[in-house]
Length: 413
Image 1 (cartoon, one colour):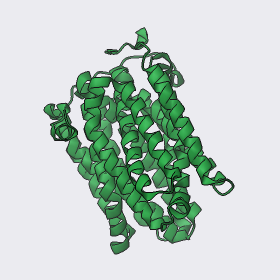
Image 2 (image 1 turned 90 degrees about the horizontal axis):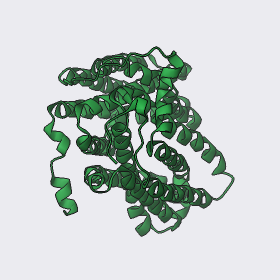
Image 3 (image 1 turned 90 degrees about the vertical axis):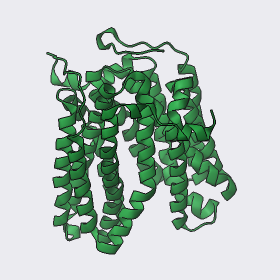
């Protein structure tokens, strides 16, 4: 089947009405997310004149992943759809609090809102993982995740630009009101999504043991645990690419820093195509093979950043976006398939922490290193780690699927 035919084919998940009704809510919430976070960072920069103060916006968003075990535990104890509706309503009220900010002296309120907003993102992401597990059969999970990823990446091409344009034209209040409206619309659309959810499993375990069940499931499930470690290492290493991108543009390519927008768009184009093709590849080769191939494409794309040639860097950036998206879709599908329905929240939260926190910490390390060493060494280190993870992925992919008896879930090798 040609690549064009794959892109034109209707995803298998589309045949399920609850999934079709979830899609408009996904579009609405992603419009809000993509428009808000970048505009708030620009706003803080304008209020303070400080790059560090603006960077703390992203740090606050990343630190919200620390609430993952608590959010995952909550999601696994209640009905997911009402949780997502309430979370969007609370998110609308929380974001509206930004209208109170008028000066740099109220910066604490901005950071508090962003941290709370990030926490709600963790809550809704883990709830949606469980909802998809109940909504779709195993063989359609990759299709559903691929379509959601395609929509997400397509919106990331335009909504940050629209949010920034709205900020410049009408000010931060306009961005806040649009975001609030999107969250309210998402809550309304979710009321139309009807899914027969798996009931919560009773447990007499202590709270900390229940909250940590997701990590234990990852460690005991093959090949999920090993894949989590390899993916976490590779994604953490890519933090160095985020740090090195400006030296690549300024010194390697001899271009103005504004060229970053073009590179981000190319990365997004690669990600959109990857999201549209991931389900087909997963169906033929499996999740672990697709993830490993995605890591290989990521490494190949990163190598081009060392070339100093625009003709190589442009397709290389597209390859990075393509590879990362294949990795994410394959990893999420594998995690959902090998995890019982009522552990989806805790396991999703555990993997979010495993993948996001190391990357955030290494971004800080890279920011300190880039001023002291040649940026090309950071890129070379990234390529090496990702290549090792690629090889490890193909090796792990040969292992049999083993799901703990106590946490048995439908699974096929």
